[in-house]
Length: 286
Image (cartoon, rainbow, N blue to C red; front, top):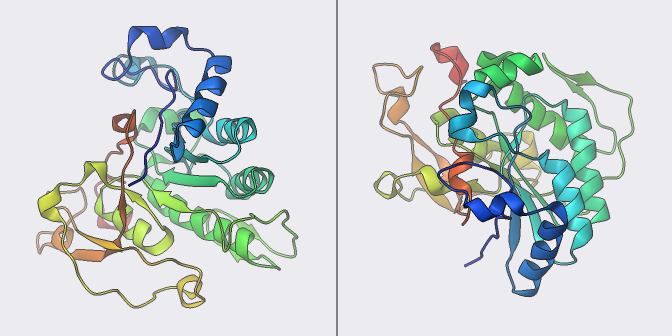
């Protein structure tokens, strides 16, 4: 079993935050991160939001880091402990810049970066950032594929609806091969499919135990997987049997999904739960 240490004052959610945490400074967090490493903790998670609308502050709190900046700082302040984002909001960030930031942090930390990507839940935050909220799942899928191409290809090229590049060089590559571990946060059916396709980890704190079961390993479905660049997951989730928006009456939401490895955190994990993905159309779940 591995343990994560959530730094005090990483978020200020009333349901989770103790009053004393408000006095914790960045310098204090640096000392705590080093002490967590000395005590044998395995990972420090870093949550992220860019802005919190005033209408959500009472529930979500106002205080969040830019996860990748915080990861890089904490990695520089420590020597062994892994630094994970929990979660990094992917759709609002350009994938080339995101890939560069994470590969830089991984290279400079000698390979101690993990990233947990989420699609986000706050439509108002997306509106402020100018990102189409109802397309966030499709944006995330395309951005993930583009990031992996930049991390793993000697001559990266990509053509999609939201990002296109070719005839470019991209270095430094991440130290970790084929790339830093990717986790996918959330529990809606499209999120689970995304985790099975792209990720080596899934934070399973929002899954109900009776909804999990074992099944055979699926056949590789992407060139990335067929090339051996995907680590298959080790446990299995059934699709949630509730009415996720976009599920058809014939039972599409109850289909069983590919294998996923469940992983968990201690600490401020509840702040990272994601709402079911995109709007009311079945297309939004693809």
